[in-house]
Image (cartoon, rainbow, N blue to C red; front, side, top):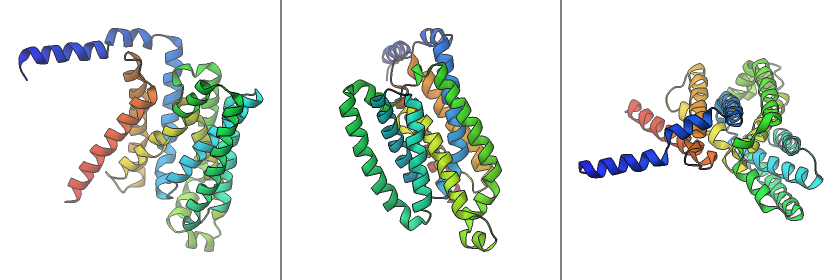
Length: 287
């Protein structure tokens, strides 16, 4: 590539990512609220992710997100809070997953059956509601319009998740690593499974409001999947998972501002790029 081509490419990139425009948007209150909201989502996603991966619950996250979409669609039809509807849908789904799918071999079939039924209901509710654009935003997210109420909802959810997760972390880890010994030792394995599933449901419900039902896994699964490629130490994996989730979340918002691209596109792109790099680094480290 010659000097002229390089200059033209740099000019095109400068127009695509207008840094002055980005700086101006970052000074706006609604963007700052969005950054805080998605940073909190990155925190809880990075926090829960390693345990989700360890317990092989990736499909459960997808199921909870889809059922959160169903609850939000029902709320739209009923004319009540979409956030509350999404939370109810996700928590109910997660509780069912935890109760009926405690064994790994049962979990996928239970989630698949419940999710298929829930998605059918969601499509019905949106059809009756009649506004396609609003329903589409539930699938792809609307972080830049999270608003004060949405920020409060995410903040309260984050506090609840962090507090409960801290209380159950050690017995849950024990139950995840060796469930038979945990049961023999008197650990309430099923109760912990349900509680953790509800925490995942809460996180998924807020993720649906911010980045959409289709892309929740980019913050709840991918950062943790990347982290486990670099280390087997649970503490290190937890820290890396949170860092990767925050970089994906905050970086995705900032990079999407000037080009006016959907935030979810940038979040998923950064998250996947981190995963690919970590996978390559992990493979080379094992050679």
